[in-house]
Length: 342
Image: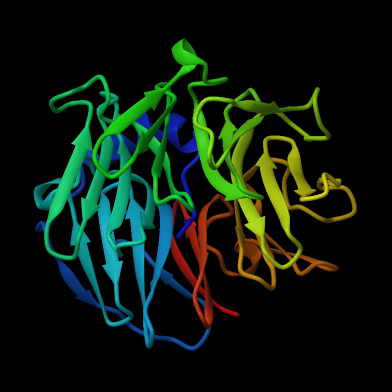
């Protein structure tokens, strides 16, 4: 259910991208465009279906006989069924158009998070027919989520929403509860969330990671450079590798991984491994680990490292999001979406 998500650098770029978006031609609330198919790498942008070139998040919704791609942009949400694009914006029910993350829950509802310059972005939920929004710009601003960066559903079916500046929100199916530094949370800047080894892990901007056990809502355990072999305390992304039973940390200084037996490893650009030390996003698919950086995407198969850049056809080396389908790797950049045959 996890996706590829937006991290801190995206938020810092929001102001400049917001200015660019004001001048964009207004589109219909729901727009469909036919897509040309090719056999190799295909690049999608505003010229062939997308409402914006800044691809902040990608989520693959899997069904028995098909897959649907949901794409978060800086100008709304896009549904792609491999035949046409369908665009959704605030007019359709999104809290804001600056999409940061997309997941689905155990009831097959779509959850979409957003941010804004006014810090009133929130969470939108889609049941296939209707949208429901939760935002701190609406009623009950003390508990409704605002400026959400990342979403996750744990094994107890709770929805966690990590925010920029407001800590973390948790939804139990009826109401939201907020944890922040005022009531014990180690950090208010939550960049990513994942469950690993019966623990819910949270990545932070500058204070490493912390976790709670799935059955405990209050005892936050910090994991940072001082208490572990974490390579850097500024973490952008978390991912778990079910093949090797490892948790991956993408940071501003490279990558760390830890096993369930607490064995740590570190990876940097040394030896032509990572394309860059700033690792914005990590995705695993059971065969490979994909690292999105500002200098391209690196693929690791457990033995070998390979990097794909603009020299190989990418529209940009700034990788914002990654997802995989049965036959393809989908790469979100600041200059469009890439479909790459595996």
